Amino acid sequence: MLVMAGESMLTAALVEIEHEFSVPGIYESWVLPVVLLVGAVAAPFVGSAGDRYGHRKLLLLCLSIYLLGLVMGILAPDIWTLLISRGLQGAGIAAFPLAYAIIRNRMPEPAADVGIGVISAMYGAGTFIGVITGSFITESFSWRMTYLVLIPVAILLIILVSVFIRENESHKRGGSLDWAGFSSFLLFLFLALVLFSLPAEEKISLFAAGIGLSCILTFAVFLYAEKTAVHPLADLRLLQKRPVTILMIMGFLTILAFMMLLQMMPYVIRLPTGLSFSAEIVGLIIVPGTLCDMMAGPLTGRMIPRIGCRIPCVIGSLMLTGAGVMLFVSPLSVEGLTVAWMLFSFGMSVIATATLIGVMDHIREDRTAEATGIIQSMQTLGGMTGPVVTGLLLETSQVSMEHLGETWTVPTIDTYYLVFLSVIVISLFLLLISWFFMDKKKNSGEYV
Image (cartoon, rainbow, N blue to C red; front, side):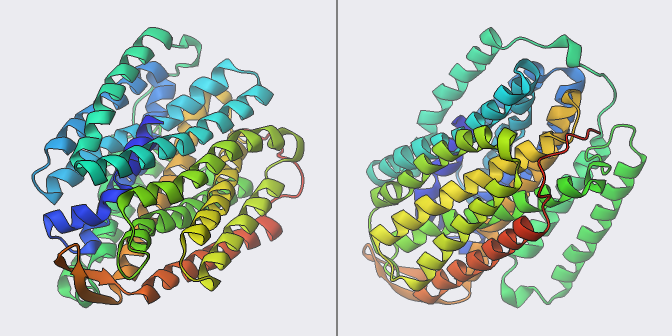
């Protein structure tokens, strides 16, 4: 709840951040994905470290780094300091696999699936709190004040973990950590984000070519490190199992589409080319969807032991597709955005929960945090890519106009529908994978 609240509190403030720091929208679009970039790399690393040295110890470390990022955020004098603070907040994303492992290690299997669904529902609960609180604070005070809400809660959570979570010594395995894989993967993702974020006129240049070559080299270093490491960051043997590969691809695409829409919502709702409403309306439109997200997680956790992962993934994909079509064919309105977002959020939560539990069904219990760190990393990579894709699409056509007494450069309405169309294409691909490529039988329970 805490991490997702911190992620979503700035959603309504993206327009103000871009204007305050006078940066192009493509750099402002890093504000959301930089948290996910660090989280994507750190999740499998922290998960592996938790399996070896203790989940509680790593959980406290992640929360402490997250708290430091919050303190830096409230003081950020420029966009780069803000991005660094957001990067430190990515340690909160890395804590999720530790939570999954604690639940799986302490609960019997049917109840553990529901427990995982409850944790997944906390994504929606955190978003609910973050959007409501962030919208109100941004409109009434400043986006910086959102951190004043998060800092005391983070301190309280560290205290609660220290007091109530005990270490399960039987699941410690010892062993070294893959620092080479961690650092090379982090550098690769950073360079890829830089390359992806370059304005269109700079994508064909010597600088872009150099960044692209560096991406290839760092990824090659990462693959070599994984091949030679005793305890690799990403155990590639998992990807040799066809169901695991399919589930990871689906997790990536689902969160990619979700974050594309989430990034665009404040623009559609607040700018004059959209609905031209205040920040509070962003919260009112998004909150019903977060409630659907909260309900879908536990419900999916209850279904999967009986029917497997395929049917929930098909249902979720149909919901995503329906929501995208609804947005594309209907004129912009508060009612239309609210209903579509509710449908989309429910479907997203169903698929995200099903893919996570599906991967866990193929691994041993003592490797839960390590393996869920990998699926978490794939979902986080989707979340990191989504806002950047939206930023690029919104940059394709812009106009200058008066807004709030000042001259703003804003996306045209056509770019919003371009994002809707992209979401439809991704959702249809998810439906195709769910229907034709997922196993029709229940999960086999094979372990690695």
